[in-house]
Amino acid sequence: MPRRRIGGNDILRARRSDTHNVVPRFSARTRPSKNSQHDENTPVRPRTARARRAVTIIVVDDHGDWRDSIAEYIQDLGLDKAILTAGSLAELDKLLLTVTPAILVLDAMLPDGDGLARVSHLRTTYPSMGIIMLTGRLLSEDKVSGLSLGADHYLTKPVNLNELGATLVSLSRRLRVVPAANPDDAQSDTWRFDPARRMLTSPGQVSVDITDTESRLIGALIQAAPLPLTRARLVEALGASADAYDTHRLDAHMHRLRRKLRALAGGDIGIRTVYGVGYVCTTPVQIVGNLKP
Image (cartoon, rainbow, N blue to C red; front, top):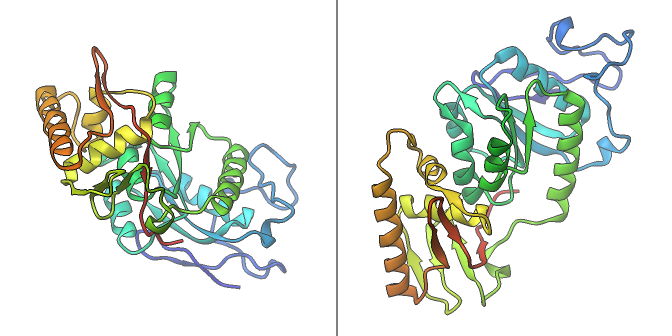
């Protein structure tokens, strides 16, 4: 049955049918032949793959061949309803205008920006979306930072495709049993953050409109909690370069945000300064929003 896979050029691809009448246009080096020996990158299809609910997945990587290899591998797993691909953050932003994926596979280093710096904003905007980071960064502190900003998994390149496959299966299973939060189900005795409407609601049901900058800062702190975030990571959450940004501006933003929340909502969601590090959110905040499945 033909499957539509949308990329930068909206390419129509046909997925192999069970009778193997249609063969995808991939070179032999991206995929073993049927007669080859099983190796570490040979897809291992879960036995119940076809019974699983298919999901929309976006793969973002600037290396076209590798991006296509990942997309073809995901097709072989049978998890996808549609696979969308992008080679940059700008292309990803265009795709997100029309679709909310269940899972995003995101390269950390892209031509037009740092994917890692975008994670906290993506997480707060799409709370139920699964995020898998792919990166060549080997330092454990980078991995901890990526996970604290909101990534679900952090895989180091060169990525073993079977490891990626197992991660996708595990993540898609979790996404099926954990529904997205929505305002109707939100607990009334906790702070609630709606990133789509840029609104923060106190336990006393006082709603405060916040700016895009404030929303990015709050989202990053919520995702990292109870761990603190460094000033550099908060600057990156704003979409700026930590090397070129004056951290005094960040401190001013945080000061105005806390003062605004205290004046309008009677509290500041427990934002505290961690001297020598950055800031931390010490109060539980629930992320809500009506999201596409």
